[in-house]
Image (cartoon, rainbow, N blue to C red):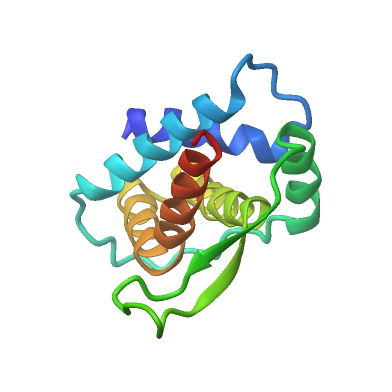
Length: 151
């Protein structure tokens, strides 16, 4: 759990600190995203039956302001909506690097809050649930987009 906590602390910094001081933020971000994804894919936990309070609402606009400050070149991108469909039936959609990272950060802030305020089991369950139902797609899309930026 300490590895997951370290990754969460580092990636959420981009959403809570407007001036993260790193030389190659994109490279660091890619490594952090891969680390989070690895933790998710290798996760083992037991369900915590205790009822806890919900985490606070993390301010989307404040996180957005900080993400934009840290990644001023982040922008919209096009993507295939269903990669299982072949041409000419392929549908194109629009993605947003900023929104992808904001959603990942918000979900990880909720996990971090649970680590500090509920239990390890509850935090790990929430991490697994939020990744499986929401953040995993944002993470994969953002990693693909960051890779394509370097081509």
